[in-house]
Amino acid sequence: MTNEIIFYTQLASLVGFIGALFAIYRLLVQQKDGVIQLLKERLTDKDDQIAALKAQTPDVLVSALNDRIKVTQDEIARLKNDGDTHRKEIELKEGELRGIQDKLTTLSDLIRESDLVCPECGDPLVRRHVYTIHGGPDGESEAEVEYVEYQCGLAIDGFGVERSHCRHLTT
Ligand SMILES: [Zn+2]
Image (cartoon, rainbow, N blue to C red; front, top):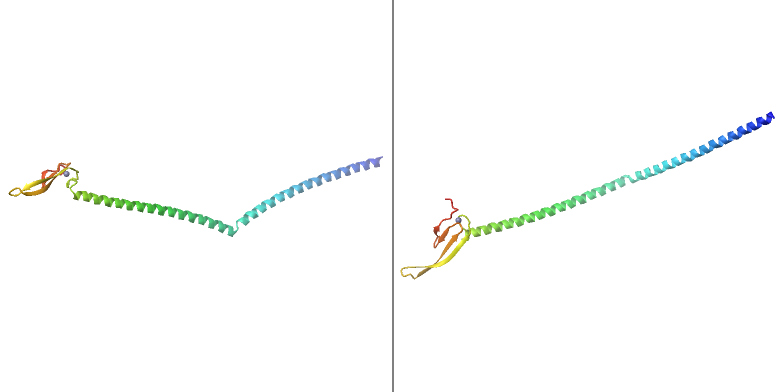
């Protein structure tokens, strides 16, 4: 009786021990799985890091830098071309402007040299007419004379005789 009790008690404790051992074993297995999972994740991270490091080899870096330099050179070339275009346009426009200014000066000189404007102030001609005068002892000599009058009042008759003065002339 006592021996049986001892036996069952020992058996129960043995079963309990085995159960505990099994639980511990399962726990350890679970932990091992967890550790394996963790290690797998870490390995994946390392693989990614290795891939990233591989991507940063000197060749790749040099290649990337060359690409960047090429892009910059292209941009500089494009800007240079743009600048040249603008400079050419500006030079062209300046040339046109100089041409127009020259033409204007020539035209202005031509007008001043002509009798189309008052030689003193530049007012425009308002009246001009040509008439014939007769001279000579018997009135047989003829001469064509011109009478011009400008807006400022200057009137020149015949052979340069001022009939009225330019009102803009201060002297
Ligand atoms: Zn005048």
